[in-house]
Image (cartoon, rainbow, N blue to C red; front, side, top):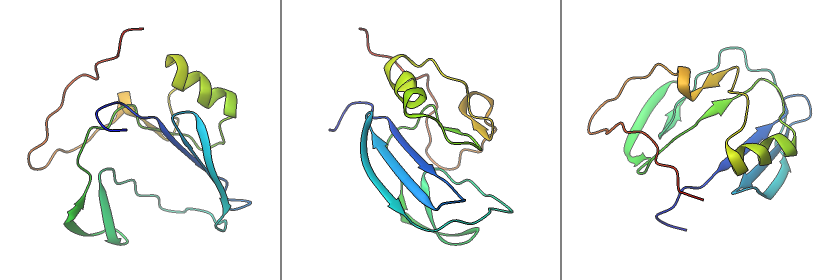
Length: 119
């Protein structure tokens, strides 16, 4: 649905290799993709890297708005995900926390506060 905020949550268990995806609080897919340990993580938002650490194609960049990106080093329960989606009551990510994020903006990027819809 265009022109509205969406909540996307994904989870990956490195031990079992299970990946789960939720869109607007609805579980959409569960799939085994393989497990491993990540020794040197790199997080890139808004751009698809064509090889590890770079080689970006500007035609593959995200166009839209991002807000409240968080990452944890443990699996959140379905109830914790639902609580976040329903009323934004959650513990910020311990790996990546949107409010504590240090970032670089390159090109035409606008930074603004997220506007919450009235209930």
